[in-house]
Each structure stands twice: as structure tokens, then as C-alpha cells.
Picture 1: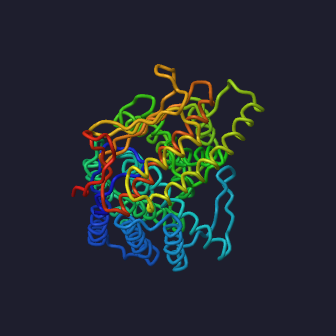
Picture 2: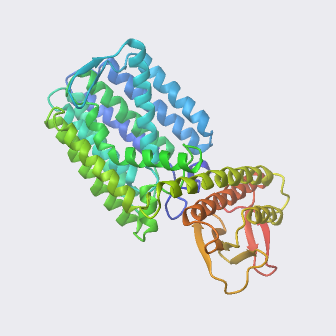
Picture 3: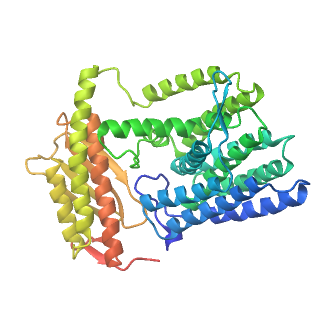
Length: 463
């Protein structure tokens, strides 16, 4: 079933669980809207109403993807369409304030429309991107709702009641989403929360409730903004598609360093709370402390870059650039092989044939050994010339939801740099994961290892 899908290759977690949490969030949101309308004496404005309806429309788009994947391009087009309709209905960005000088710059109608669309789409995807570890997206969204509730005090009783209601909804959701999660918000919940937060901040900005109504949420979202910015730079340097997901986000690195998912989440909560305090400081100072907080954010970026191995002082700039050029060539070559394997998966009559095609890729990538881990055993391929007991560099990627539990990939030590090895292993593991997923979908069968014959066989999937 679509709502009980495995997580994707790049998403953290332990096992397949329902992705229907967005339905609970949307239901709680509708109840919060009705409660806020009943408790508030003020009428719901046109701007607020189109944000509420647009949020539900964005939830529908994400829910559709949870049930039946529709592809990244179609999702982006849908996000732009919904954001365009909402912005075109009157929710535009009227002016931009320079956070350093406090000067306000009026925007024209077209510029304001485009800026609003960009803001809504960006917020929608930011919340979705950080939904890579249980509890992170929900926790940061709760912090942003606290910020919106504070911004609404004394200016809009409806917005205040709605924000408080959503705080309660998110707190209830986090009870079930905290590691180990029993339910995920899915794309439906992430799109809904991101769009709602983006829309409400635009409404607050246009009402002029706070001088820095748009600057403060940027500080509250500093963690995902920093994470995404570093990811874009990292992928561009490696020659990978800028919007391609990977396992190099901050939360992935913390887990790789040995921290549990729960401890990783708590550490990110503490960092997010620091940024949230900066956001409140922007409100309280009416934007005057923005330069100070920008400097603090810059120091945090430097700390993250060096602490998580995103930059190394061991290499000169020339050596680093040469390594990046090698990685760009290897990444393009590996991705072409991965695309071939995924398309070839539908033509493979048996799992044995699929494994044979993957072995072909392993040889092309000059891998030393590959171990396909299964519940009942493992399938091993070793390159010619690799002796027993030879020291190899290993990397493991875990899979969930099928008989195949993971894949281990090795190369000879000193054959490639650690960065290049890490990238090749991730791309190769992802290639197998996508090809196996496509084979199962085409043949309506799981891939399993029959331990008595030591070969791959297909069996009907379990429900």
C-alpha cells in the first residue's frame, strides 16, 4: 500500500511504518481553524482564508505522492501552481526590509508576486527536506508555531488561537513521531506544514505586526537553511544533481558518528532552540540585532563545516580542486551506469539476471567486493585478483522492508580517496536499491535468497 511504503534510500529510520501522519495533522488543523473562528471575535481575512485553503491543497499534493509517487518535476510544478494561485489571489510580498539597515524597499506587483511564490515553495520544501530523521520536521515546525503565536499577540486573535491550536496538534503528533517513530508525516504532512508556515508569515508581514516578520522565521529555520545550502554546494562540487537527495545531511553525519537517532534528534533540537531564541531576539529588537545574529550563524556554519568533515585542512586548494574534478567525472559515469541498471531492471526475467547486471556495474566501477545482506544469509561477489584476507575499505548501507537488509561494498585501500570511495559506494548502493525496487514493482514479487540453493528467487510479497 502507498501509505505503508518503505522509506526511500536516503531517509533515516528503522522500519516501514504508516506515512499517514499528514492526515492527522490536516485534521487537527481543520479543528484548530474551527476552534479559532469560534473563540476569536475577529472575522477571518481574505488573505488568511486563501492561506488555509492553499495549505489543504498542498497537503493533497503531498498525500497523492505518498499514495502514488508522481515524480519530482510534477511535484515542483504542483507546488508552483498552488503557490501561484494563492499569491495571485492577493497574498503577495509588498515590501522587503534590509535586515542590516532597516530600510524598507517597496516591491512592484510582479516582483511581489514572484517573491511570494518563491517564499511559499521554498518553505514547503525546507520542511520536507529536514524530514529525514524521526521527529525533526515536526519539532522545528512546533518551534515555528511558537514564533508565529508570539508574533500574533496583540494583533490578531484568530492567528494567535490558530497557532496555539497547531502547537497542540504538533505536540500530539510528536508523541507518535519521536524515535522510534510509529507514524510519519509523509510528504502530505511536510508540504502542508511548510506551506502553512510560509503563508502565515506572509500574512503577518503584510499586516505589519512586526518589523522583521519575515526575517525572524529565517533565523528560526537556520538549521535546515544551512543544511540545504551546504548540500547544494557539496553536490555541485561533486558534479551531482543539485536537488538529488543524499545521506550527507547533518543528521545523517551525526548518526554515522555513532549517535543514536534519539540523541541526534535532541542535539538538533538544542541547536534549533538556539536559532529560535535568535528569532525571538529579532522580534524583540525590531530587527536591530540582526547583524549580531548573522555573525553567530556564520560561526555556526564554520563549526558545522569543520566538525562534520565537510572541509579538510589537510589539502591545498589545488589538491582539493583536483579531487573534485575526479569526483565529478566519476559521479557522471556512475550515474549513467545506475540509470542503465534501473531501466534494465524491468527487462530482467529473474533476480539472478538483475544481480548479474549489478555485478557488471561493480566491475566497471572497479569495486573489490560486494556483499548483499539478507535475513537468511548473504550473496557475495569478489573481483578477480582479490585474495582472502586482503585489507579492504568497507562501507555499508542498510535497506528496510524486504528480505534484503543491506549491502556492503569494498575497495582496495589506497586505490581511491576516502571522499571518492564514499561517493561511489553511495551511488552504487542507491543503484541497486532503485533497480531492486523497480524489479519488484514490475514483477509483483520480493527478491529473496533461498539458502538451500544459494541463489536468488522471487516469492509473492507479504502484506
